[in-house]
Image 1 (cartoon, one colour):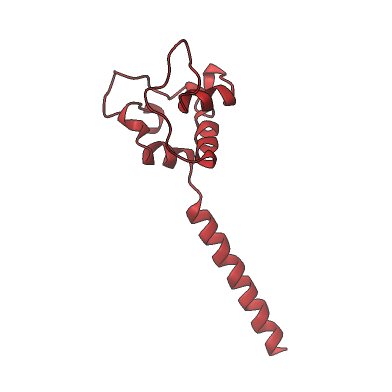
Image 2 (cartoon, helix red, strand yellow):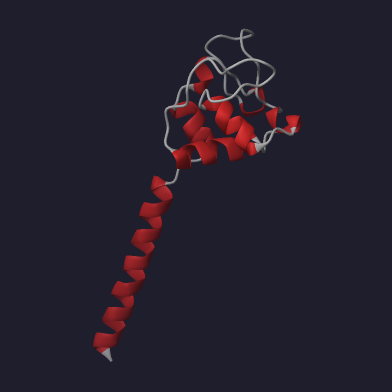
Length: 110
């Protein structure tokens, strides 16, 4: 009986530690935006993210209202496509998973 309780306790502790490690590694769209220094150019005033160059580049507080396709935003950020005839100034340097997270998050800003 004591042995089974020990294994159960260790199993639960192991699951909890894996859960904590996974959630600590997951980055939010906001984390990716800030960590990739997107706020050097863009602000998101609705979330109190200030641009280092205010009024030079668009605020993205309502970018999700533009109804842009996910694929088009990804291509734009990777400098593989344009929006309104313009290419993005800097190619996104994160990996594919970060790009997915960032774009999905940007589309929620309304």
